[in-house]
Image 1 (cartoon, rainbow, N blue to C red):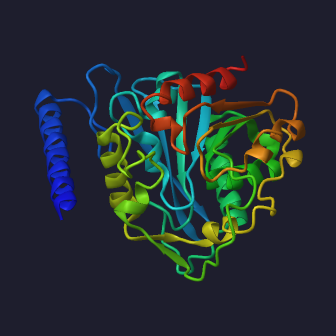
Image 2: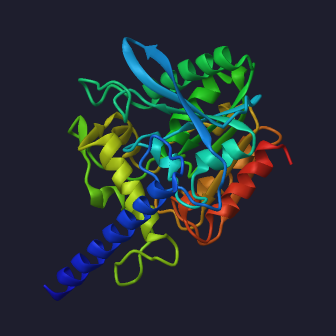
Length: 331
């Protein structure tokens, strides 16, 4: 009971801090994105968010582009989300944690796709429909659209978690318009056999937060993740993804670790495999040898101490950004 009271007090204090920050920036007239966000005065740039109509197989998909205000970049990158929550997670707009704004600030047009049934894409009646192969076709359709809109022949592609399965399969099947591929926290093989019988996953705040690192006592490790980041990601998940999300991808990955989900030998474009060394979902035996099967120009980067969400972890997100940018620049 005492622990519950203390946790309740902590939660109230956190909400108060967030409310005060929102009010402070509202009064100062800061420009914010369409996502729930707290901009930081140390990042003076403003960004443009634009949606693009995209339909595949009779389902309306959410595709948007983020650029630095006033710029028309000639570099494009498409970000692909994981198995439960949609692409808003790439834009935790607090301090310098937003991967979207980092890339846009470095001269990219940053595109985000919500797979069918996820986030702001149209709902699906069958939650098993958008499995890994289905999602790979959604990604291919988005790439074609981006090339049409941008006039560019090739774009870069980044997948995170289950997004490495879907982006990896897309890159293997449709390499012609992909310049560089990033597999971040790659689910190369099954994460463990578990029977997924329900077509939709029941989303909760606790589930949205489970990827953050914890202390030995079971509390969030705030030396690794800022509490505001935790709250913003979970709030975004609740706002954009709601109480359920499709389970086709989960059924694909919840299989025995002996089953390969990505075939690196079929990928023909330069590929960065990047992850933390504390990611509970990864098969490190496969991760450590993955570049043996990837084409020339590929590389493996493992960030010591980081987990599944290295891109928003306090000690690691800048390291993640720097390694990513070196690869995208071909260094």
